[in-house]
Image (cartoon, rainbow, N blue to C red; front, side, top):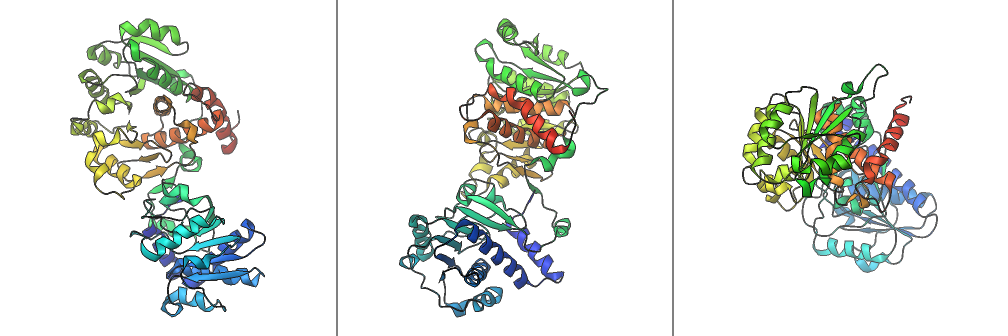
Length: 499
């Protein structure tokens, strides 16, 4: 579940080599893994390896030699002169006993499979000139493509397309995934991802101390809340969802429903009086309480059993929402700020961040989408065209003092301490009105049960994505809470929990 940047992966290689494993042995294992994947992708027909001048090309040469030894028809196109190769890549090329083809798109021909071994995860410059033409030709050839480590042209740490990039059918990577295997747009170029063991031991991670993780149940398993036989509803927490005016109540109700389905013992909707009848008529297990003013809101929070709060969905933009946020922060409860709560601070984001940091041990989660993020973090959003989502969210969490969850197909969650998760399980049909409101409620439901903010946000993102997959194409946001019991059952089964 650990995700390594290009620099961290290089360090894993160096530590393994320092411990006694030759670098060329790692290259041999990598190339053999590529050859194995190639033979599974195509059972017959010619295979072409397009090799670059570095270690990625060396992996390609090893794969070519292995495939030829298995009786497959193989040819190699090399980006540079063969005698210009250095180090392990040069050793790998010596193992290829056949000529190499010129670096010309016309040399590709009509292979059954193209192995893309041009550039690895460390690419940091724009691809242009002859390499760009070769990549365009690979993409236009029509043959399936197997990329080595990452599709050439994708930046390994950011997922950015560096001008042009290979669109792979499958990608073989080694030891651990890189951010680009999870972040868009790079992830869409990877196709299926195969993770190969090449002899790097997991104990190198103790020295590297990676801070980025793929958002899977294995990451947050020990924080997953399981009701106890001797428990009661208040032991599972009491969440409070702030509703907007009569014309904007649906978002808060969806958050409330998601919160209840996530496991909160009780959920109350704080409703303006003019919307009380609308909310009460549409809710059953969720309680409704009349709250118009920030004074009434503060009085309500004198009940310490109310231990998590959602402000934002349909709350309205303006001073009233700002006052509610400050009151909630002062009350020192688990707090999810979404939608209108974020936009309300667009003109004065530092006012929000200072209030969060002034809270004692804040358990605060900000949940912007890409349109809302620059309203609070404009300079972080616009600083560099190739700055990764991971870097932006990490910087936002450090600045705000809150856990920041930036929504999207590659939802990324970061904590102020630098930890981050990237999710890759959300189906495309999850992009529908109201889905984010349900997500805010799921986070609050987990906070109510005592899950720490970073783990609650990460857990909620994964559960939200799985709910989307469970509901299937055509879902609407109201479907998501109703399939959460199935998601819970899957987790209970995976974790070996009786129910």
